Amino acid sequence: MPFLQALGYDVFNPSEVVPEFTADVGTKKGEKVDYAICLGGKVAMLVECKPANVELDINHGNQLYRYFSVTEGRIAVLTNGVAYKFYSDIDQPNKMDDRPFFTFSLDEMRRSDPVTLERFTKAAFDVDRIVEEAEKLKTQSLLREELRKEFAAPSEDFVRLMAAKVHQGKLTAAVKDRFQAHLVIAIADLVRDMVTERLTSALNVSSPPLAQVVSPAQSGNDDHEQIITTDDEIAGYRIVQAICSRIVAPKRIVMRDQRSYCAVLLDDNNRKTVARLYFNSPTTRHVATFVGKEERRVTITDLTDIYALEAKILERITELEGV
Image (cartoon, rainbow, N blue to C red; front, side, top):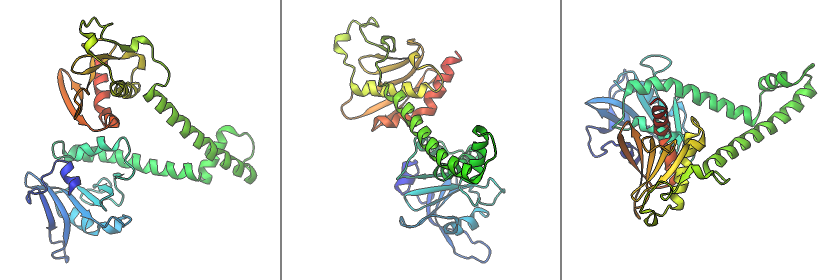
């Protein structure tokens, strides 16, 4: 219930969040699904809940599977309150897939999860768009799981594939075993290096060039003595800079502090605002993103919440680069 409420649905409106939803299916009369989410009087999503100590699998979604073909909903959610699995009908129309197209866990939230979950909110819900993206998400999810298995214990096929790229000669059993051991170590080193690079980019351990952070005095602000740039503002700027570095050189992202907000600019141009950090309030903090001249503020509770705005920030950079 709190999860559905967080997505913007009115859990106290029984016509929007319908508990114990019933639809007769063949010989199964009176069988119920825990919740049906209805929008515009039509079923948008079906939700089946299990105890938190249950390891979820498709066998727990029998009701979902049967109801999927007799309702208008094309999104089904199987959850134990910790893990959430989202299903659709990618493989065969009007038949729920055996594998989810999106899975996330409250115990292991990925940085991309909040962005994906936003598509399921009441305000943004568009079933056609969700289903269109579902195939991509499902493929990426399956590939990620296979890569996870290969990285933990490389299969013989994977070992042969990689060995063929760096080894000349016959791949004997002894050579294969040696390459398998080397491959596990190489993968671990690569992942560690990639994490280190990402952290270094975000935190910018080395001192940045002066041109990257513009003080109020440098910008010609006569009231600069009344402006104090806080550590949180600098850290927030570094996160935005790290996100932008996927598209543009980090040195092009500049911070300029003002009285009421801290601006993050592209090319030190106040007409090219990437984001604004409203961190001066002692109780609430906001981060603003832009679409054209429209400013959209989001409340954050932790600096890492800025990563959830990655898609909007990158869209802004793309927009500014096209101007």
